[in-house]
Length: 551
Image (cartoon, rainbow, N blue to C red; front, side):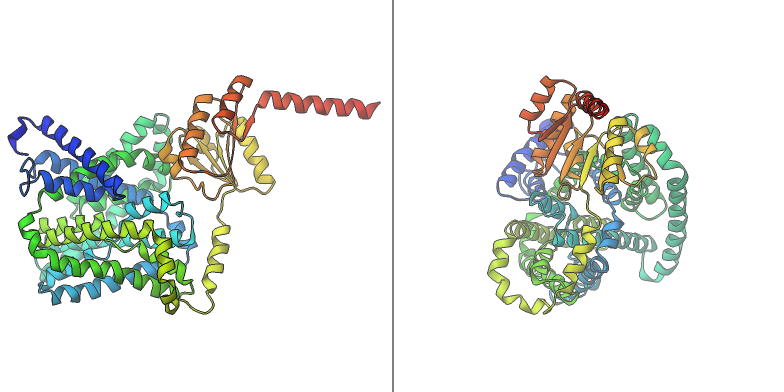
């Protein structure tokens, strides 16, 4: 940073205030914060006010943010989605990546770029923003819709591809030229195999028991998750991959544990805060003078992303037997480039494969496509109504796949989400399960979670008071949320969080006094269970029936 404010702390404070103000303006304009943060970087960078330039403090925070981003992506790597969606996630994800990269490469060549630069630009155009898409789908309550599941499925495929691309680019950078890439690739594969094998052994024998112990303290669990992400990121960099790959594998290593949702929910805010510095640093490094020369190429490439990416998704989904409406709504989710595209460009810049002008071009395409696609997704239904008559070519006469996927989705639904797996909660879970209801159990006690292993219903570790954790639950599927937790403040927080998430099903909570029961009803509970009073009433009814039958 420049010394204009006297010390780093004051400059960071000014930076954060500007980010908050411009971020608020961006939210009012219904724009993702990525756009606002890059704008902050441009504003305070050398091209505008000159308050901030690249520096060690911001760079370190940016690197930590990228590591946590890849960690959370790995943590949420749900291969179950890919399996349940059948071949559609792989076909659409890989098909779109191949189409965009190949056509994008030739467009870049026509625009006068050399082969390496064109390759970077083409690959950067292929990846869509998982963070932005999931956020927009969540806001519209469409995560569990058919097109939402398809979109999340091929976004996961894209996330895996981008990690593989980063490994390849790092290997090429280490080799120095294409001639040495073969030997470098073999060395990377050997190191990578040993690295993954070591992580696999830790997953099999150490990580889950360790997390059971650490989960006794939520703060310690989060601290370990951050330390694990950064440590494996550093190990990945030392082994010649990249810190991003190491952090991604750290997330994958914890993805199969019952603590992944709780860890991910608690890291979301920290991840977003640290990524702020990456996007500010990126914006501060842009030269507005050079961006002017990139406007025409940026517009051409942006139109390709905004139109071409949705078209190829509609072609693939139509060929596989989906309706044109599903193809259109899913296709809109790939009409932008992602934060990974910017990270990929930054990696290429650090390796010397591309120059600052190319990085500026990629960033400009990102600003245009992210801004435009946000409105396209927000107003997807009115937009579909206008273009639907011209989309018949993307639909088979018999959209057979929709029915098959609907049955597959139904087979994985949850009827009741139950908070609290103590004696009362476990008994209710078993009773509900025996009566044919599909139950998802949630508890904050790692010992209770561990004891549930091997039972008929799924169990997650999580906090009913954490709104980010509630957002990770399949609320759209559940017809009832049930809490056996006796503490009234926790139940009040749960009711508030469910209302914030827009949950429309029935909510039943537990109370141990009439006064608390009234508070919970006022807060929105549909049913209030009073175990002792209910059990006493049921026992008396049983005794009276027995007396009546004996007379």
